[in-house]
Amino acid sequence: MIGLQFYPDKVIHALVKELPNPKWSKTYAMVYIKNTKENLDIIFETFRGIAWINSNSFFKEKTIRNNTPIDINWYRNRVKTTSYNYVPEEYLKKLELKRYALNTCKTYISQFEKFINHFYDCPIVELSEQEIRNYLQHLIRENKSNSYINQAINSIKFYYEVVMGMPNRFYSIERPRKEQKLPGILAKEDILKMINLTKNLKHKCIISLLYSSGLRRSELLDLKLTDINSNSMLIKVRQAKGNRDRYTVINQVVLNNLRAYYKIYKPKLYLFEAIKPGKKYSPTSVFKVVTQAAKKAKINQSVHPHMLRHSFATHLLEEGIDLRYIQVLLGHNSSKTTEIYTHVAIKKFKNIKDLLI
Image (cartoon, rainbow, N blue to C red; front, side, top):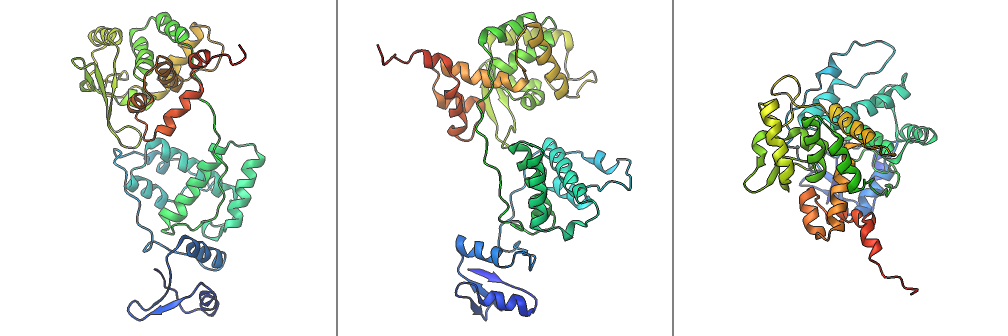
């Protein structure tokens, strides 16, 4: 059942009577109706614009992520001006408590500050669903991508639902349809050219690992020396996306290069470190390594680190490796995510028989 508690109010009381078959519970001293998806929709629709709905005691709290503690004190310590609305301290505290990934925190803070500054003179608590819809329409008129708009919605919902403790406060905010874009891939010959033309051994190892092991950039940077198992020719990827550990493969040539790299650079903790020992190599540096290698190889398309992971999966599929094994190597939770590579496996298309012959 859905129990309804509210302060005495004639309007709310009248609206409660209009709900489907409301009954009174002497035990819990509240009105209740049957717990169905339809009734839940009716409740939010009935009281929209009339009452704030705090459903904390009805919806279970989302589990806290197992990510390592994040440092977002930069946002607290910024030099502030009176002409800009900054994200509330409560927002920052909740992000820390929930242990959201650092990139997620940056996105949420940036998007939420854009939202509250769009309504600079209006206090946050006075903003309604209509204002949110107006803001989303503003983003659409600016030709923002569906991904960008979804990030904006997530940052706004985080404030009202998590920070303010009002789950589904904006229950019926429409989201744009998810775009089905095919992943960008590179030809195997182009990737090998990128690797061979890269003279810096550290950079060569970075490009090789991203491709031959199918690693995300963040996974590469999180690798520690102890994660490379040369006996089993496997790499342990710890607490990757979705907080899941997994194993992926390592190539013998790459392993030999890594051994030579270790003798020269002598990293202390992480496989790839910044100038300061024990500090991770930066994501920006990895991006530059890949883009510069692509320029040397004269690849006439925009290249980024994640394309090497896409290429890894696609080339394995083209070589006849079972999709389920590729799913495990990539660390995908669902096979549907991995199936997208069937749309870009060009070699498979060439094997299709010509029906007109």
